[in-house]
Image (tube, rainbow, N blue to C red; front, side):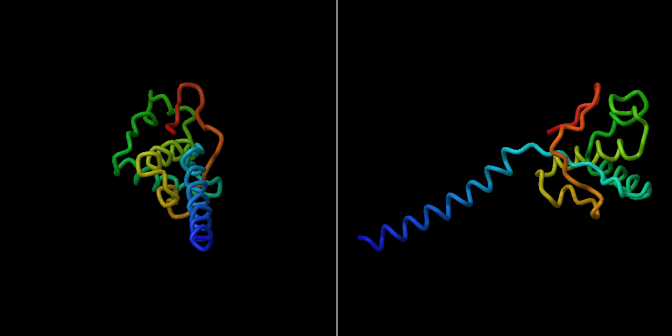
Length: 116
């Protein structure tokens, strides 16, 4: 009986630690944004990729809610985050050939709202 209790206790601790790690990821809000070190060519490539993979890119078009400021890094960050949010919110979905990074502060501004 004592041996069974030890095994169950160890199993309980292990499963609890696994669940705590998963709860942390699921409960924390993150956004995917472009790294400041990304080149203009990389940023444009990320925009092209995201827009071709089903991301609604109309907000970064002239007149769209995220067009201003009209910079590649802002447009790329919006598209990269939209892709990340719609593709499982995984580390891989924010990689963009190592030009993506995570933000824990909401990058939304004015009428430009980043999904979370």
